[in-house]
Length: 369
Image 1: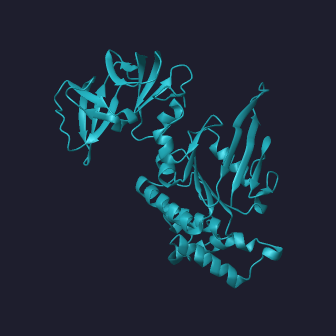
Image 2: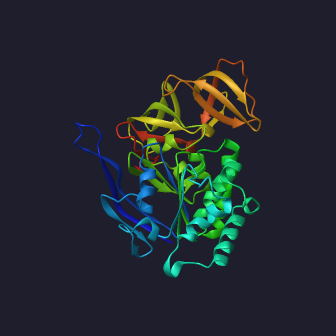
Image 3: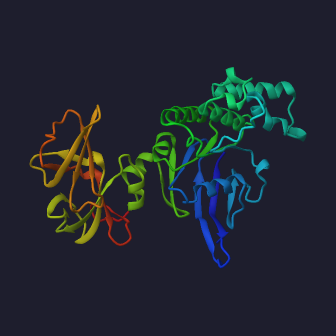
């Protein structure tokens, strides 16, 4: 099912006895979510992503704007009539019910023409359990399951009604690292199998980038950028997006463009064709450094960390915003760990320039983003 958000805004009154203003949690959010796609809502805590999800599912009423499921305006429709499945961060399973009873619960509450026979309900519950690979656990209670198994029960319960929209609110945050990786792969597999339009809320950019067809990056209630994970990573629209995406994070430097050449400190590190003379933020991805004994970018070497297939070089430069620069190179390249300095050439496609005043992107060639 296609979802259309038109100028969606949600404001809450400020708390406190003397507060008279409003806090804007979601600000003029417009976006068309294609049918059958998995969308990642991504941003730091407090950016408005969970509020946006609550508006879509009907737990919150927008201050202004509209929500359409297909061609139907559902802005003021109660949650139970929207045809959605919801998976919460804390699973929200009934501890006194078995896995089977938890999955059956939404079906047992259907009324009128939607009501199913007991046989139909059992078949649906079993099919949902098989889809998430917990059909052997139907007689257990939530307390007898691992965190990952409980999450699968919650997903099965959301899918059993065959919803038109599946909403996932940070569903992996309570799992350990290895289980998070496994479960997010399962979620992607389930979404592809069911082709249900899915919105996945997370603050973990690795999760969002690994399973989403499109990601929406939010900050302070406003959308910063929408695109495929690779597009947003390669071409961030502003410095916030560049900093938020990437592990290890991007390295940020104070720089200056003079005579179409980027300078960081005293080093002329890269040609910047079409960019006028100005002070800039220069953001360099960790994979954008090439060790080169004649390279123009000279840094003080701190240490070398061998990580199997890759090598991480930790170095320092007076122009860097943080105390350490992290560069990722191939393990086949040799770096003397006892050297005092390390020199780099830079990959032009991994160096991103941003305006110093508003942090908007400056593209090489002089075209603003």
